[in-house]
Length: 203
Ligand code: FES
Image 1 (tube, rainbow, N blue to C red):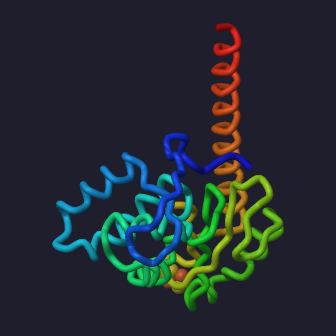
Image 2 (spheres, protein in one colour; image 1 turned 120 degrees about the vertical axis):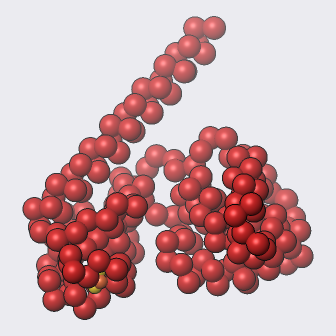
């Protein structure tokens, strides 16, 4: 499984300034700059918490305990407060996920319109159950309550893209496209890495 972490993030273990005695991974300069920019949009530090978690997740793929403590220390807000924000907003991942997270709506309208059939299709195609990630690290499947598009049920989100009025054929097309894009990106990344190593050995 290829890394979902940006190379610039260097994990430096330090003692948490939040006073809760947990080791914490430092935030990168980029993460701090992006969090600082959010301050201009919010009145108090507490409100920036969710955005700060989103920023960390964007760079690291998910929010580990260490990352949570790092945000807590940086914003000087309690870990428990951030933890409850992370728990409430299901788009904050507290464990590693695949590059593409599938949110399949399981609420009433989508259930009436056949989301169970679609779920079976996804599970068979990817060989995973809800909460699991494919072996190649590309897809994670999650069930979710109403996504707010009930009149276009059944509905699912893949990453930040909403897919509506879904059929089983759509599932094939969407997931095949995503898999191809991710594999192509993986190949480009490996090729670039190979060239870098070749350049180094030629020096
Ligand atoms: S029930 Fe699925 S979007 Fe509302």
